[in-house]
Length: 325
Picture 1 (cartoon, rainbow, N blue to C red):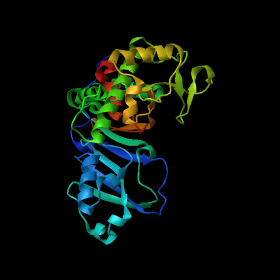
Picture 2 (tube, rainbow, N blue to C red):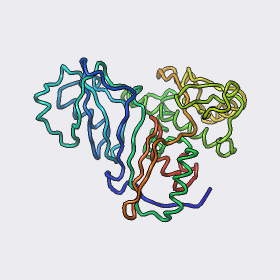
Picture 3 (tube, rainbow, N blue to C red):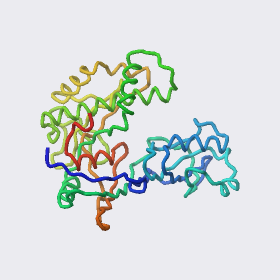
Picture 4 (cartoon, helix red, strand yellow):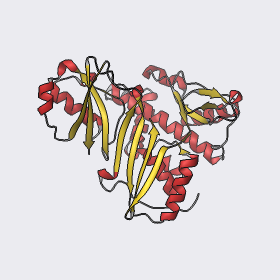
C-alpha cells in the first residue's frame, strides 16, 4: 500500500455529476416515450414512484437502463408507455424533485441491458497532496483500477448482504420480489469482491492464470489458453448464478474456495432466475482528463456499466482493497 492521499468529492451534489450513455440511439417512433431526467437528491426508484403517481401508470410499466444514487446530480433516461401521457399536459408539468430536460419516442421499454456506461464529472476538493494526486490519476489512466463493487451496493452495515444470505438459505422474508432479487444480487456482488481481494492478497490480480476466463474491450469472453498475447484482455471474476460461465484450472480453484467459504452454491440462485455472469476484475476509465479550477480539480471520465466512480476515487486515495470487503 502506498502513501495515503486525502480529498473530498461529495461536499454538495453538484460536485458529483453522472450522465447515462446508452448503447443505441432512440428509434424516433414507437409506443414508448423516453424522458431524460435531471435529478438531485433522490434515487431512480424515487423518480419512478413520482412518475407513476403523476401519470397514473403502474410502476412495472416504467423502464430505466440503470439505477442512480440520490447523493449526486444525475441525468438518466426513463421510459413509459405513450398511452398514459398527454403530451400537452407534459409540456406544462413541473415536478418538485426533478426536471425533464429531453423527450424522445422509442419502440420499446428501456431495460438494464441497454446501458453502455456513464460519463462522470467530479470536483475534488481539500486535496492534501496535488502532485501525488496527479501521479495516482496518471497511473489509473494507464493501468486501470480494481473493479470492486462499492459499499452502497451492500446496504447500510451490509444489511442487503445479510438479508440475501437469509433468502438463499430459504428463510421467508416479508418483502417484494424486487427487494428479494436486490438482496440476492448483493450476495453475488459481495462474493465477487471477496474473490478479487483474494487474488490481490495473493498478488495475482495483474496476472493471467491458467484457466482464466478473460474479457476484451468489446465484452467478449475467451479462455486464457486461447488468448492472443497482443490483445488487451482482463481476467474476470464470478457473478454467481446457476448458469455462470466457469473458468478452469487455478482460476476456478480460487473461485470455488471463496464460494464454498461463504456457504452458497451456484444452484442456490436458480429459484431466483439468476443465471450468473462474469465481471472484469480491472476496469480502464476512458476519455479521462482533468483541469484545475483554483484549488479544486475537475475530473472527467467514462466508465462501463456496473463500474463505480467512487471505487476509483477511493482507490486513488488509499490503494487498499480492504476498503471494499
